[in-house]
Every structure is written in structure tokens, then in C-alpha cells.
Image 1: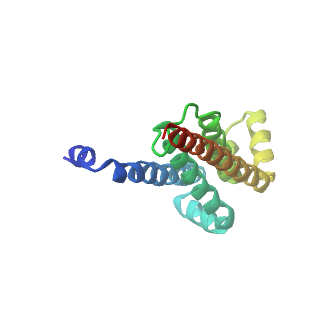
Image 2: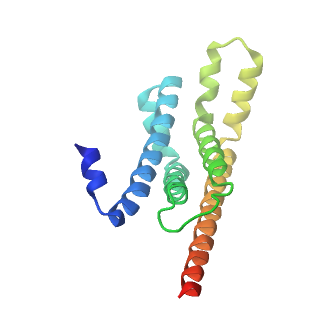
Length: 169
């Protein structure tokens, strides 16, 4: 029923609904991954406390990732311009999301490895925990870079399409 309604919508509504839905979905998914991993490592209460403690950087990472996913959807589905190439945007979404997720859960990773007798994992988790803020800033930076690159591609392709339309008239 929902699918029929969606495809019965005007293409203008769909052009705005697709990126909005995927952006919200991406942000929600990143939030869930973060909360689940920290909950497994510590507890659900600790996950919420940690989220609130780091909200100044975690929320921008999550929102930025949502924007990045929305822009990627616009480019991939060619919603606002006939994009000939999405460039490195898909890789940037993956790198930004992965870096952000690792950074956000790094603070609790050392608790997971307390039960593991593998020294290498413990050392890596301790390293991540020690530099988690730096990794979170790097994650935010890659997310912002992805947004800039995808916006540039979208505007360039849109300008190219408008120039072609003007030259044909």
C-alpha cells in the first residue's frame, strides 16, 4: 500500500522525499550502531550518558552523515540534475561513516577487550580510547569533506545541465 502511494506521488515530491528519507535513515542507523556497540561494551545507561557527554561532537557527526547520505542519494538517483558521474562520493560516505562510528565507540572499546587475552586488541583499543576526540574530529572532517565534494559535484552538474538547456534554445 505504501509503495503504491509513493509511486503515485508526483515526481517533485519524490525528488524531495527520497533524500530526506535516506538522510534521516542514515543518521538514525549511525545513532543505533553507536548506541548498540556502546551498550554491548558497557550498558545502555552508559551509552546514553556517553552520548550526552559527547553530544557537542556526536550530534554534528550524526547530522553530517545524514546530510551526506541525502546528497549521495540525490547524486545517485539524479534527482536534481542529470549527473554523469558521482565521483568519489560513494567512497566518501563509506569512509566518513566508518571513521565516525569507530571514533564514537572508541572510548569504550577498551572495556570490551578487558575480557580478551589478546594483547594486540587491548593495545589498539587503549590507543583508540586515548585519541577518541581526535578520531571524532577526523570523522567529522571526513563527513564535512564528503558534503563539500558532493555539493560541488551536484552544483557543477546542475550548472552544466542549465547551460546545455540554454544553448539548445
